[in-house]
Amino acid sequence: MRIITLNANGIRAAAKKGFFEWMHRQDADVVCVQETKAQHPQLIDRHFFPPGYHVYYHDAVKKGYSGVAIYTRHQPSRVHYGLGWDVMDIEGRWLQADFGDLSVISLYLPSGSSKEERQQIKYQCMDFLQPRLAEWARDGRHYVICGDWNIAHRKIDIKNWRGNQKNSGFLPEERAWMDELFGDVGMTDAFRAIDPREEQYTWWSNRGQAWANNTGWRIDYQVTTPAIAGKVTRAEIYRDERFSDHAPLIMDYDMEFPGRE
Image (cartoon, rainbow, N blue to C red; front, side):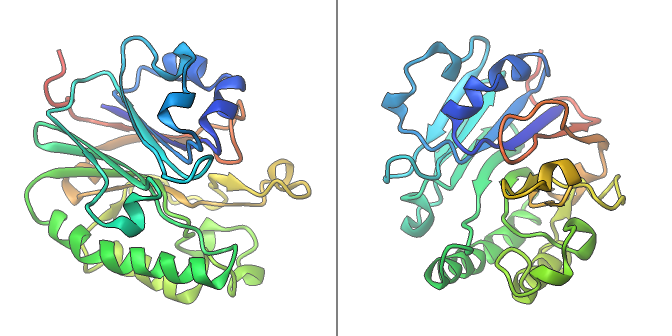
């Protein structure tokens, strides 16, 4: 089973950079995208509804903002557009597809970098999600929550950790929340289950030479229930082509996709 996640920083911009051509070559079961920055009626080109895929978009109410998508080769038994909580749902931040006993989610957790008000909304979302994630970790289903969590968990997940300890995305409160997520809550950072190396980043600022110098942050994850994390066989942050200021995170799992022919 192969699952890919990417914050596209605009699905139309990513399409122009060859994202969909690349996606077709990956033979992924599910591709999760965040920050589509588009409304469904704006996606008139055939690229946005690739043949061979079931396609789902959950847009933000605000035009040109946020939004998530799922492309899957398999017909879901159910699709959930949001969590039934307006704070996240009006911004198009949660899209869930269920396949048998597996749920794959495209999540875009808010950033708090623009102003303090947005940081407080980010904390609200974290508080809202935590008990639900704890419940899902123990309910017997398999979950893969893909997306831009907008938090670098540990020092090895950010190049300039000393200079960012007071910045959103690497605040002590955010890192402590991730400690709980991968601790008592019961979820697993599937990438770190097999790759302990430093300097494995998924996002680079467009300022200066961040990309060229690999001055990045690892803020894109596949967060899973423990049983699935134990089946990870390969993890790759793809950097050969650039579709966004984020890189695709590709993960392979040693399990058959539910219902796969």
